[in-house]
Length: 143
Image (cartoon, rainbow, N blue to C red; front, top):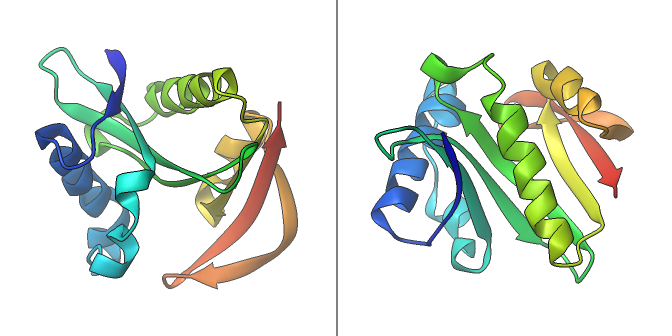
């Protein structure tokens, strides 16, 4: 498995969009909208590729300012969940961004993923809230 930054609109990026839809939207009977994808050209797209170069995990990093990044749309293919791939992706994305001077990370975790992010040093901030029909929790981490 290989950590990689995907180029926006590349074939791998398109595969990552399909994975995000499969894991995050299809179970809710939703689709990724043009509004949700607007601005992705200026965001960072990190992935884990398997031996055949297929995208099996993805996370999008949206810089908010020179020290803060908001992670969004993290997804691991169902066939590869609970194997440490999400941990590898998150850890390597954080390390890559830290090399570029980012020191704060934030995300909106689905309720069932709060434990995962807590194990990676993220702390809940504020009260849970509803987003795309699901309870979410804002979480932050400083490095």
